[in-house]
Image 1 (spheres, helix red, strand yellow):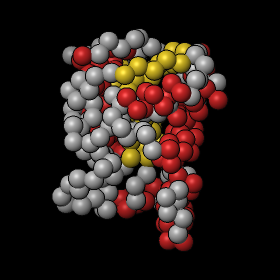
Image 2 (cartoon, rainbow, N blue to C red):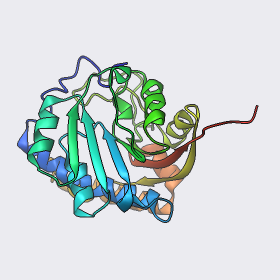
Image 3 (tube, helix red, strand yellow):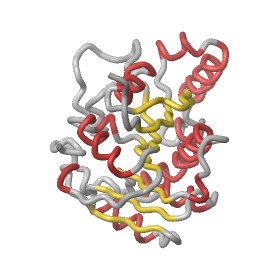
Length: 242
């Protein structure tokens, strides 16, 4: 089960320093979202954490700054990502290059798994989610909500590599069909710094403001028109009534 689609250059995608800085800014949002779904439910500071699709280690670094794990292991299919992550020299972390086929990897057990902006890249997301269930009972997933009115009829083969498109219902139901119960779920708007990093025009800033206030005033309608991020804390269900 390929974790990343073959046509995209995942191996070298973390070599660009400008994009590394952008990911560093984005990791602030992502870790804040992890804290939000975990608040009062999960004691992250004392947990063994696993991140599959850890990229260049930007999330791990932000987690470490906030003291949000006891031990961390990151897995990534990109050699450039693993190299960048190891170069950060983050205490109590380990980074490992893995195969693009989930079942070919020997994942170390943990208490919570992170899948931050990974599932939208997967050819067979349920196969990885089943493997994740063998690693830990708790799971945090974040995906972009690209299944909205801006989604074109035909797939656009761009370099981003998002081959799955979700809305806030379909990502929830995907997890439920893999024997996870949803503990908490919420929608967020990426920060203005992230949105305008590559485009600082007046239009880009106005779009961010509109998205921000639309989400505050009418979340349901806002998600029909704009792309936000959805973060979910889920727990594996060990048995179900017949």
